[in-house]
Image (tube, rainbow, N blue to C red):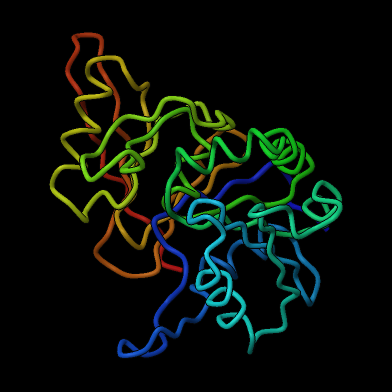
Length: 243
């Protein structure tokens, strides 16, 4: 089955450490939530896309290792050096959930567009495959967002896929520079109104409408940030539902 409407989970969350001293992860609760929204079968299909890190082998291996003990049909789509799946469109449309990893949002968007993945993913979304992701895998679905794709200094990115008609700020609580830059870009009109997430928080969109914020830990929030008619920027804190 598929979700009852086009669905996106745009997050600053994903996998959880099994052991803080090891590179060893479990799927965080956002994945179970995604499978529920997808109305998936007993063995849900989830495909990982790691374009944002150049399809790094370590990221792909970590994804498979995290799901190894779970009754899930896990797969991945790599585009470097060539697609690892012969029928990319067919493979992605057959999934319950597509999860996009973090990394360089700018590079992800450029490579996707070369391969026509932007059009395929829109078809998946419209066909009610649940789309989700963390960091770059959150920003990409929006019109715009702040990114470190071009260097250590955060910069605006304004050529997102635009499935969601908002700007997006990720890891909002991780560095002091993220909040003021997001405010400045909305205030000066570079970005439209948008949503931001602290680490551990995700936003559920049904179609293009905000449904709720969810979290995998207490004490973190989502935010609605918008420019008023007088040019001032307001930020509304949104308490998330703990998964």
